[in-house]
Length: 357
Image (tube, rainbow, N blue to C red; front, side, top):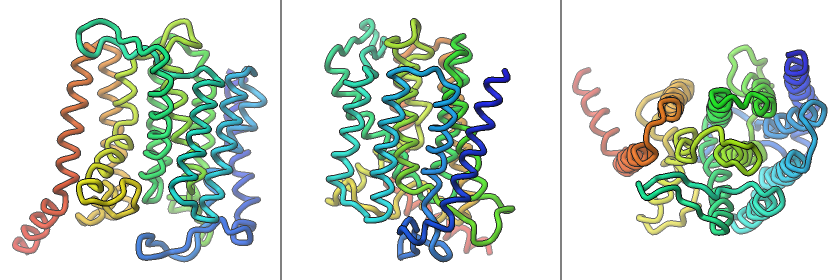
């Protein structure tokens, strides 16, 4: 218990200390977000949240987590991705180099650390699906997808951080339910290292002029981290027994995953690039419907918690994998349909609201 508390203490204050150091430096090195037609906020905001989270994780895990090749490769991959994210924050890299660098990180994860999805479980009532070597390719694509899912959802204050904490906390709960308590130290360090960022990002007690954003460095780091933990937890390549089934992972990151795929489908149907930035994400729709940024954060976070609970309960009560997959597929179809026709629904809501007035 003392080791756990010491690790969390170091993670928390390392993150705060990094924020204090980088706040005055960020404008001089270009790590700031300037308002434009898509970004509505007051003044230039430092993009240092992700760097502070990673620094807290790096220091605490180096001191308190059992050292080994797996941890080292995770930290190396994360450091590389945080660096690329910071370069993107400063120089606004195009899609191609971002995908290439994300692919390099995914390659390190799969071929260097040996962390990949090989067992999919009994999803179609034909027995356990073993992907073998094809699982490596699938995992690389899934890793790139997860990185971009968390990057895309980072659109309002606190959202990417909240989604990360919800996903990682769910992994901790599932790990404890599987009696693999020895594997929770790193996830807990990640959660605690994120708290200082959230204070500077969304707290009403944050001093004026001290607001920070996570930046691409942080959102991509969180996407990689959640994917890494999900693969480790759902496969038995490292642990003797997996903590949860692969289908449960879909429910743990349901909101970022569904939002990314639904918006990419919507863009392609319009003839646009799937990577083209727009205002069609769930948080944009919530705010267009009349919710404030804070209300949108609460609504989306509540929705994410609800879906994560469905996944946890499905795992706890051993609901058949094909049922969990079928339910998730139905949910995604409804979500995608709602996203495609969101503006019609919003127009109807506004008309009824005006009539009632």
